[in-house]
Image 1 (tube, rainbow, N blue to C red):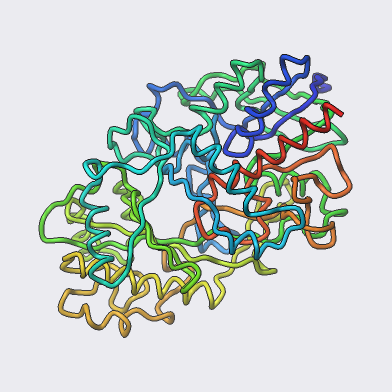
Image 2 (image 1 turned 180 degrees about the vertical axis):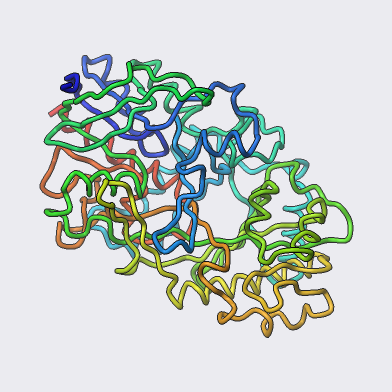
Length: 500
């Protein structure tokens, strides 16, 4: 059966930080007679469907239930697939990109001051602020105390929250609707102005000024509303196409559509801030899974290539991140009420072998090798985190790149000796990543990049990219606000050109 033919002025693929931002900025065009359409592969959930139950929420909100594996099987990549994209499932941390990062990208036409100004705009829209002291739980307070005792200075995360009740379930979608992602702010406002959003809409291929789309039925027993369109195949013609499906989604879509023949850099430059959890056990129970989980961080990106963040994950995620089996693993999990957790993130750099590809069926495949520099960064970060745990009063620390992995308080002075790069084993050390970046990098020409500084694909002025795939290299911080700032630039150029 032939696909149903539809036409619109602008079609946006993806509804997260990039797609939601572009939709909200283009929404006033609807009143001027223009049509704007957003296609989202995932479902739209009702507020009551955010239950916080791991086995329910992971398949409803994440690609591959949150367990998308790299081709080498050594790292899991987490990215959202729902109305609002990954803004639904991250913790709300909202940082402005450092000047050194934008300078290092060296993209003609991209100035740090412009990115900062646009970032501030969305931080204001999404109610970004610092939590007051009364809302800081023990897990975060102990991190601050431990940093001070270990000779570091912790910084507080600005968070995009409104009415946070401390469920600590951010990564499963806030059950109280307190997280101000695009699903709460930009998308509803865009829809009020006439932008059409279609969920469960999988974009199969990009054609010349058009998209081939398959709309799926709501699975029996699945969460979320049925699609706004009838299930079936559609061909959507559009004057402007904006890809905002995330680093992996946008890159894979262009690759399976054949654009790699003309864009040799497509899929290259993938970075992701490889991360793993460290656990410190205290003598007494602490408030860890009550309260916002991520309120403080330690930025050592420029000096030592890593960032530490407070975190607190639900039992299943904690268990799979712990090294070992049997009695020792069971004992640490039984200590869950006494656990303090720190997330270690390495600031990886774009290298040739780390890239996004597609298999014969067009499905995304991510190739990622841990370079010696990344392993050293994770080891340095692990040592720093162990020192922070012990300075905060922990009786033992679980460190996957230590031998043995459980370090007792009596051995606190030996962390440098016990934690070594030779103990880091890809595939054995549990590593995950959620800051997925690169694949459609900005730059000068098709010889060194995929788009220009305004997200226009080289040689195809009707095709734009507006997500984290634009980053030429690692951002060194949570990418959320920077994605919105770059998407704002993309939307601005579209408006100017439509008016012209």
